[in-house]
Image 1 (cartoon, rainbow, N blue to C red):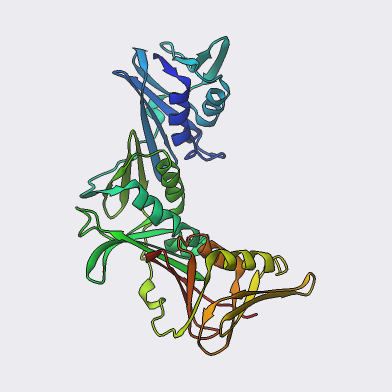
Image 2 (cartoon, helix red, strand yellow):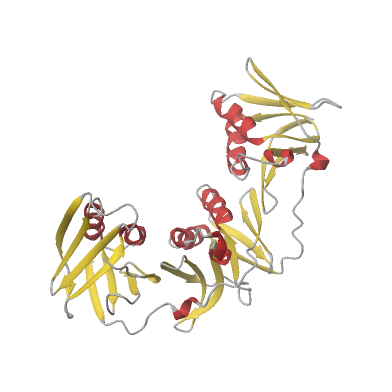
Length: 372
């Protein structure tokens, strides 16, 4: 194998694939990136056995061939080459080392046979559609903060994507919850997505897709079955196994009878929460909201750090209420609100609160209160 490729082109492709590789691997081949050069294209592949990313870029191929070499090491080498340099990759017949050369620099990297590199069998992916990159980015950004980290409830360790209806209009919905908060976001259902099964896309895959979306074009092709999903973003394809579990009936968590409506400027609200929470204990992060007509007071107390309170104006006409929340959870939701106003719909101090975005009617958040 022998090829020449522009440094920035190779670096971008390596950046797309190398983050899939775990830093600590018990299986040596999983630390490697597969390089396959043929017909003017260089294909780079990495996998952790659950998730695989393939990036394909143009290169000057003098001799076709394929091998695997340490992904993070190759990425770091290319990253440190000067901008604008041409990088040469060469593997002699029978060699177990890859030569990487740019300018006067030369590196020799260990290789493992391509035949040992695992392939993820996609199988049949019968459901196919195209979704706009901005829409997919929005679905991910507004829900992923609520993905659970609790491994025992593995079916919550991802975003639940499914087809549904809202006010009679077909929607593609993303939902995530960790049992303390829930995020639900809709976008119009793409053509071809009708009849798709509800799938849970794992947290790691969500993170990788989100990174790829920053460099993606206008649209993303999606193909899925009950067990796998594939995202095609320009010259990069990500395939992942889905979480094999049943997502809970989240509709039962969204309260409908809440009658106490608080509206506040989102920027003032989030900044006040952030300031007051400086006092709250690291464990609970509790902030109390005391709401009376036209006024919201946020407060926090800690046996070690003292107390804090801040008052902001708010639109509220109901009975006075005091309710506590985890400040980190409040700030996570506030950061996803696009409009100027955050709307909190409450029932009492122990029932779930609904948070809505004045700038995005298709986004809804639910937050469980805590005792303060």
